[in-house]
Image (cartoon, rainbow, N blue to C red; front, top):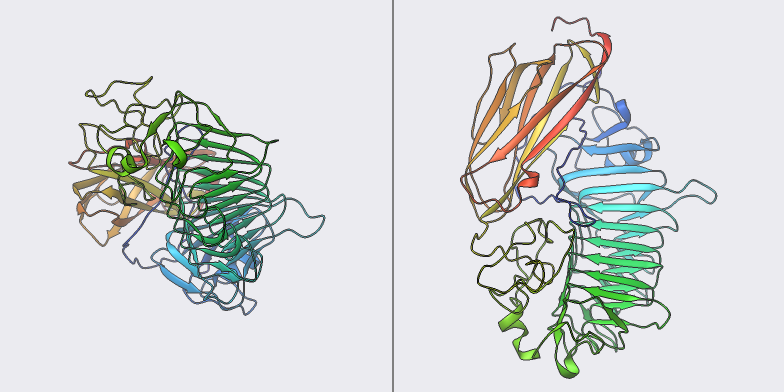
Length: 547
């Protein structure tokens, strides 16, 4: 059996709203030693075990770069990064091109940096090849540069790409190129991610879309373009849900936040502080639909909407007069433009908890309890929605308008999250399994006295544990039970890991499940991500080792 660094199968608890998902945000993580496990490619998993890039035609247990792992991974496979590996990978071999269905999981610890020399990533299939399905999770893509085809990532026609818990930043297109951060010809789903600080010499500083685009729980912020600083949408359909579009700029005679010519759904989102000839949104079509519901389009410079033919579904906020969206209905909330940042929104885009930045609502302002969001259970941050403020009259269901749900009198302190990975998908009796349990504080405040309880399956026995923070209480070696990890205080965005090694006791066709939960002496606004379970299959036979 070849020695190699840790392989992982990701399980992250999801906080689901009408359509959506959850998060991953990191600042620090312990660096753990590797252990001898399986060979590269086992169970379809390829592990990057170096922070350096390069390609020498070999991806083995001692040296495998991200470029090599992507090249050698089989269709439908998964690329992960060794336990404890973190930091920036400076790409040296050119654009990281995905030509097969693949998932890449960076665990929130890996940055891919193109150094301003080429685009960071492309998802492209060969003519006549099957449509690709790719998932990018917990990655930062930065400093990509392209003359025309998406500075950060290019998604080819018909390919389906999901980007979760990731950041696309500092990328650019030149020579009238479109899509500074992302250029999409396929189907793109952006979940709990940030597209920030990208630049396009043409359209779409953040995103250029000619296919299907869904944005959930995300932030499109501080991007710049000749036109459509935030998003240019000329595709089939775009839905922006529980998300923030803020601080984007058109440097030409264009639109700061969004230009749309295809069908566009704006749901429970906030569009503010964007600037251009029109700061907010222009829907430049009379044959397609722009539906807005429970959204804030206000505080944009010099006005919120251009020739936006808006079909208001109600419970929106915009400005009065020239500054507002003229087509919003009489049932929507209208405020004087000078009151937007005194009676509706906090002016600053901040870390208010959760994986992405938001504009907080002003307490008991125009948007609090004035909305209607049937079916939604969380806001952009993953915090509970709706929350009733007893001092405010409810428009319908106590939901707030926009991407942010005020937590009312029970001000949330810290959103704790637990997730798990495991080094094998299938085992036999007598084999060792290593669980990696990650606890994060998604903020916005410090979480005191954080404790993680990990309930081992009755089909395994405890071997060992190791962690870089806190103390662990575990069953005696050779017995089962609960592993308790007393982490202590966790500051906002802290990220800690414990590894738990067990021996498989059972044999035959069955499964074993490991369950972890986290808690602290703190108000937690999002308890849906406080537990995570992972199940491993047990195959017939034995490893030959005594369990």
